[in-house]
Length: 339
Ligand SMILES: NC(=O)c1ccc[n+]([C@@H]2O[C@H](COP(=O)([O-])OP(=O)(O)OC[C@H]3O[C@@H](n4cnc5c(N)ncnc54)[C@H](O)[C@@H]3O)[C@@H](O)[C@H]2O)c1
Image 1: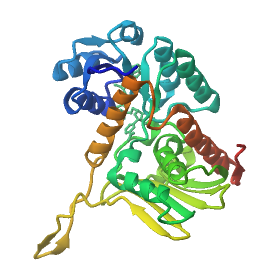
Image 2 (image 1 turned 60 degrees about the vertical axis):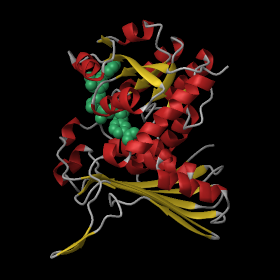
Image 3 (image 1 turned 30 degrees about the vertical axis):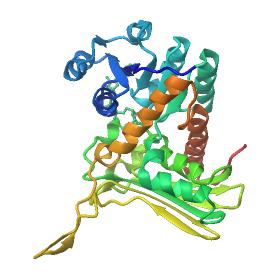
Image 4 (image 1 turned 90 degrees about the horizontal axis):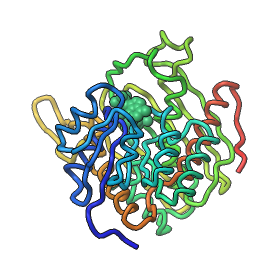
């Protein structure tokens, strides 16, 4: 049975992306109410709730989950907390939207998927690129057979520079678990039905070579072979001085689709210095539509009980590639995936 009224959402984790998602729920979605925010950092939930007019702010997760008005939760805490919160939320009967990565081990991914199934609640994960106009149209062209069968697939993430984070505070393997996980989902999603069979990854610290001997990686290239014969490449770097550069490409037997453009728009400036374009500088600018559309899809999943966006299984499939990358870099070898 479909719900025919605005649905009530609670945000868990009021940091950078959580605040943006809360704004989307409160200000950009007409059919959702932001009814509560939970964050253990003193004052964080309260401050954001006051800004957005959300009636409840908590420092504990259990208080939020005990709120019977809440029908779905948006989880935007640091990655290591995701699985346990997915499980607790599902056990409390709340629909779950979880930022990527949903889990850091396959066992945890299975635990999250099982909890959602047992609780009979929708579980959607934050692979927002699927809603970007160019990527959505690329996938549609592939589905329509316009490029034939995929042979070469490419996805890349270059985060905007300058890189000013402290590498000592970034958990090891973040480039695979939190950055390239988007690209792994993209490669899988643009190659419908194919299964990855082999992963080879190389990674280094080229932006901050002074942290190379501490296991920090800011640059990586990954090749993935699929069971339909196609070969894919994903790459990432934490410091593109020209902007936030997200692109994809699928080359097939009958043609090619390319997706993504670092230029903000088609406005091109011609002046005494020559010809120039502004570029995207932040994920929340580039993907404002994608981030909002994924939450609109989550609201729809709450209404209908059916997830049309990326699922817990999709999160697990992308994670399997990330884990293979960790093995490949650690042991300097190609890792076979068991499907
Ligand atoms: N899809 C995307 O493009 C995208 C973009 C940015 C971040 N993310 C993901 O979102 C997650 C959060 O990233 P961020 O940059 O917003 O982090 P952040 O550090 O800015 O915010 C995390 C917040 O969670 C809070 N928190 C910690 N433990 C908590 C708990 N147990 N319950 C509730 N709140 C808790 C912290 O106090 C903090 O306010 C990460 O997994 C990250 O990979 C995804």
